[in-house]
Length: 124
Image (cartoon, rainbow, N blue to C red; front, side, top):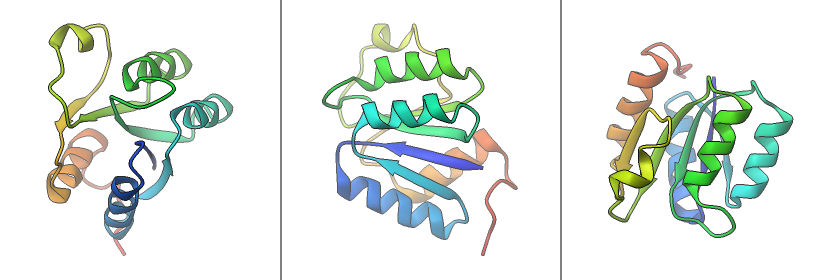
């Protein structure tokens, strides 16, 4: 199971990648959402879960998720944001969970296990 994390904050990407890798997940990170979208288009079935910030330069997480779902509707989605999100912004989206930043690492791992299943990480 491969997880993609997209955020314009490199510190968050490194923190999440390092933690989830230690939890046994195969994690890829992207600072630039348009490059992440290109990767998804080129590898439609590679990723089981996308974790993305909502507010990013170039393309919003909301638009990104709309495009991801049109490419592969089976990809699970976790949205994250440091800002309050209007319910109207999210009602058109298909996603599995919305997490408010700051995100505690064990809450993130628990959310991933709930979405992907308890035996999805290859514990080391």
